[in-house]
Image (cartoon, rainbow, N blue to C red; front, side):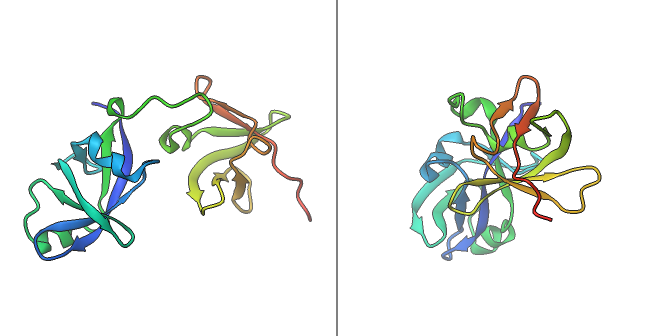
Length: 167
């Protein structure tokens, strides 16, 4: 089976003729249409995407096989996945979130801190959520060179230099 990467989600219906409001997770939002066909997470449905216009909170789009507002509304919350080989190759210092989630994170002394559970973007830069054994709470790390000096996808690990606990 082809590896896929989540590139967007359907935020709901737009208009009365089956258009959807699409939230793109690509660096250039309009690029999402270039990765068609897009698939549901389970791969049971696929869609070609034609962008129609910018809308509040995303992009207006027509999806193949979606003709009515009711069909569009039924897809609300569905994530859209592209075949990985359709995505551009990234520079050495950039990563797809899918490549980071699940990687073990070690501190600079080699102690396991946990695994990347999620990545958040709140506008000022990405934050890694690290959850691990024996942790009373999750560790949130700014995804910068200062706090995450090494991402080694070949070895399948991340080296982090978290701030000292202030207890």
